[in-house]
Length: 75
Image: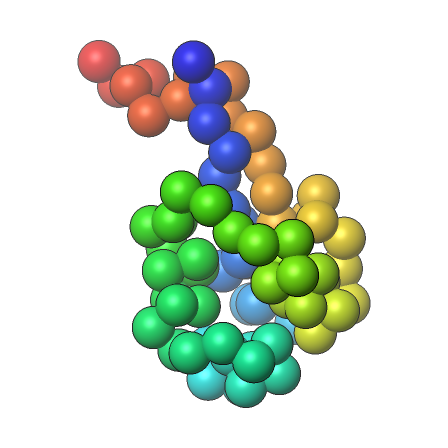
């Protein structure tokens, strides 16, 4: 089964924004944003996704990707 992969780090690099700056703009803690950035979350509120997209001037599809091979691709 595939999985959704967050590519927030890629968009942050394109927009040249730091974790601290983005967390402040979105209104979440650095720790929570770091978990999102590093794909350590199982869920995200649409309001958080919307705030991230607004801060980065992007669409959800710019940071959410589908990996059809999922986490077990190397096995």
